[in-house]
Image 1 (cartoon, one colour):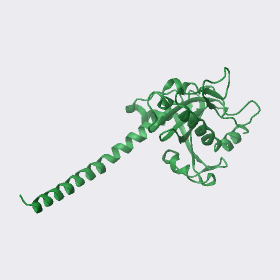
Image 2: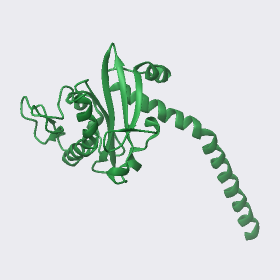
Image 3: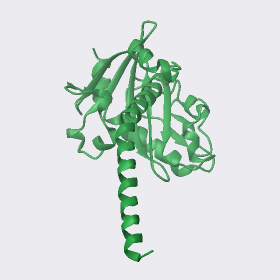
Image 4: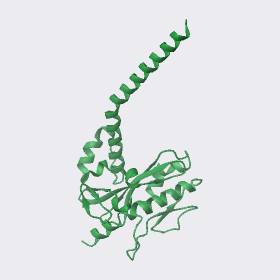
Length: 230
């Protein structure tokens, strides 16, 4: 067998495999995008205590999420699709140019305001959603996730015991000053309305969550304050 034949055969196989992979990726893209949308719906709903099986996520999302808005840095509603806003892209823009997604849910007559947050952990991005009660001060629920934090350490931000600590915490103090929740290494002081216990061995990820909440919620402060005065 000549070297020329081997080279031609290998070249043809590379082209065929590339075409197959490209075709498969194209065909699977709609399914992947649908799965990502469903997972996003599930995460948003989880912050208001709604467990949504994959098969029911779209229906439950439409049932409970009554409004989806896009805000600017002044807290004013602007045109846009809140569900399609990519917070990773928005965080790269100056604050004055950002689109800020907001979802409003109605659960048995009680309104909840849900916002996304995104930041950096030890090994990669971290993100999540927080829901607030009608006072726009008290956290009702939290959902966090990560790209590549260490299992058993930083990855625990996505575990329910860590997320449940945020329920009932406040992002404004009793005088109305902005004071977001911090993750405290060694444990939060008893009764502290603005702190939760850090993750043992996950200091950098814990600090990342603190920074994510501070930076991610501060841009919503004008909207929250405006709504509270209505």
